[in-house]
Structures are given as C-alpha cells and as structure tokens.
Image (cartoon, rainbow, N blue to C red):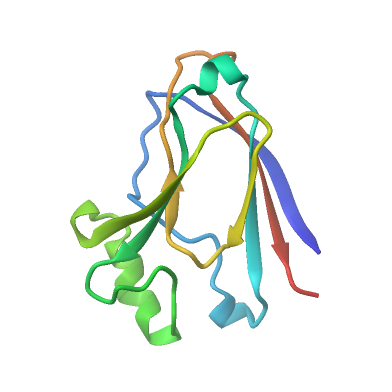
Length: 130
C-alpha cells in the first residue's frame, strides 16, 4: 500500500546534514516498508551521475537496521562518513525507478544544478505491507 509520495528538487548548494540514513524503522512499526525513487532528469542532465548510494556500517558490516538494539548507535553514526563503506551505487538514468527496503542505509547520489530546471529531480514513494 502506498503510504505517501512527493517530488524532490535538490541542487548542488543544498546542505545535507546526514551522510546516510534509513527512511523507516520496520522493527518499531512491525511492517516491512519500501522506498521507491524515480529519476526525472533528462538524459543529457544525467550523464555519468550517481542517483543513489547504498552503504554498509563498518563496525557491524550491516547494510540495514538489524535489531532494535542497533538502532540508536547506528542512527548516531548517520552523521559520520568515516564509519561507512560504500556498498553500491545506482546510476541516475531518466525514468529509472529504484525500489528498495527502506531500512537499508542509503543516501543521495550526486547533487547538481543551481536552478529548478537543471537540478536533481526525483519522485519518491513510500510503501508498506498491508
């Protein structure tokens, strides 16, 4: 079931306070949750750009929140780039949708542009189990 959706415009001057994050805590809600990101930039704006990065936590080697006990200290680490290893990256390609478990550690890929017409443009959806 779709929980919500929105469009996001992000440019090169946006300040991102967290290095990576999750978009839900299914351990608390009790329902599996998913995130979908659709890249809306035109092909000529997307050449060689990264859309989304996925990470592993260095100390635990986890790629997602695994237990309610891990949640607190890992969330504190969201602000520290030195405790994460890049697991994989998804290229920003026009009209590509990336669907993933929202408890997986992830972040924006490349932010670019200075105006609404040339900045990173996505449509984001949240889903959860019924």
